[in-house]
Length: 248
Ligand code: NAD
Image (cartoon, rainbow, N blue to C red; front, side, top):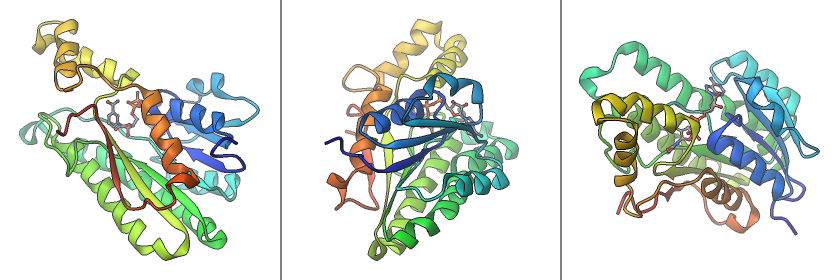
């Protein structure tokens, strides 16, 4: 039997990349999925008999509350929305710091606060947060703000896992290395000039990966399915690394 049969999952940033792959994998595993993204146009082709789509900007507190109300009780919350700021401490601005923490962290604070009461009422629920190896796990060049936000995601995850461990709630986060997604393509483009062209910029990302390749969204999605399912019932509070050896 598919591992998520009978469960309902709510996914943020499901329009492309890891969020999209995970929404599809959750549905493939038997879940009913509510797939959301700020860009509703990216969600159209995702809708199916198992996947309902809805626009949701995770920067909008009222919209999160409304989405949680309309979703009703869910079994799985996958907080995937996040933004990769590129730059060092001396290049970072206050506005960039605020934006990244709002999108990468405050959004999760809000979604978890909106959905947790329903999970507690039922005595069960799984929260998965998207972190990164660029966090408390590893320093990555030119990722000052990003690394700070993702370390905060690991911290929030451990805190929630600790407070609700006796009440049927599991909360874990996923820490990928570099994954082939549309926004990675944008980062490669942004780095092309300094790196000596797009190919060289891409090669630099691949060179960071000891396996000599980037991860795929489907590989991250498969981990999300496992962590969301009952086979992972003994796992909580963990920052699960999936990085092709980047942190070795
Ligand atoms: P992506 O960056 O290519 O796409 C992000 C999606 O988020 C888009 O569909 C976009 O419309 C949506 N989005 C942006 N702002 C939003 C908002 N305010 N509300 C709702 N949705 C919004 O996707 P990705 O590269 O798979 O990244 C997804 C997550 O994975 C992020 O949290 C990222 O930090 C994390 N991550 C990515 C990598 C990687 O190498 N790609 C590695 C580690 C962690």
